[in-house]
Amino acid sequence: MKIILFANSFYPLGLVDSLLKRGMLAAVVSASEVNPYNKKLEESVHSMGIPFKRFSASDLQSMATNWIQEMKPDLILVFTFGYKIPVKLLDIPRLGWYNVHFSLLPKYRGIAPLFWQIKSGDKNGGVTVHKMDGRFDTGPIVASLPVDLYPGETQGFYASRLSFLAVDLIVSAIETIENKEASSYLQFQNETDVQVQRAPGLQDLMIDWAKQSAGEIINLINACNPACGGAVSIFRGQMIRIMEATLAMLAQDAPQHIPGTIVFSDPSQGVFVQCIQGQFLRLNVIEMAEGTLSGFRMATVGVRAGEVFESILP
Image (cartoon, rainbow, N blue to C red; front, side, top):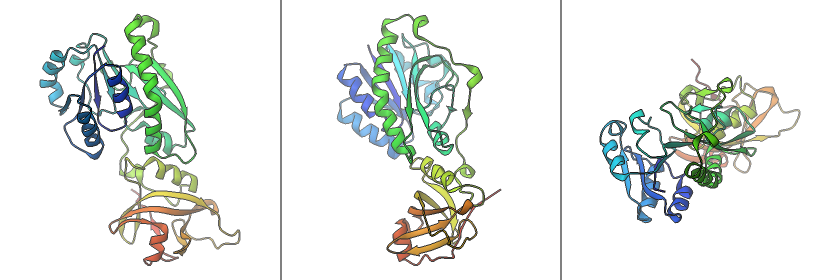
């Protein structure tokens, strides 16, 4: 079995190692734009002595075709690769192209499925391996694995955990694809349960202090960490990113303020913010123009009770 892996992050590194040990991995392909996620992948792949290529979206329409034909792979895996694969490439591998998607399809088809699952407060998710058919996340399913989300889990940690759990699922799916007739294992998706999500925009990342509960804000913050750089708010006229917050308990007779108001700020205890429904959040990690600060450090450098985090609304 000769496999090419298309990936654009370090999350598939466990799969890279597993396929390499099995003598299956012929090459790894990533996007042409270099970023911290695929740079780490490139460095690791080079250290393993595996051929590494970068293609732009336009390359997939031209030069990638000849390269793939010359490589003669039996199967191509796509795992965190953002470009749409041209239909003309799908028939080149003997066994086809297969995508690894971080949801139980057909739920959360599309871009950034983990963001939407965590923001929505879902308690269950999973991984799906499906054959690619030219559209996004619509092809028949080869294998899937339900995975519960841990309370308070961030997008980054959940993605890492799914990547680890996906390795055995993918290897098993490859064996199934190689040894069985497609009609015996391919399961077409139920089109009545479809959920399609778009890429999150800035408005999706913004905290609405007047409407979102403390729990909903925590979900948003966790969904934004790290891929979106944190949930967005406005403080002292600048856009800031909140990377971590926890639900806080204050005295039952604590005065109520406008949601988003800092009600308590102390270097030894941190910064506490009023939310709706009489709830409070303690801010733990914040990204500002001045740098990455803890709530304790914010209190140390002069953030005071009465100051307000604001929302940007249309």
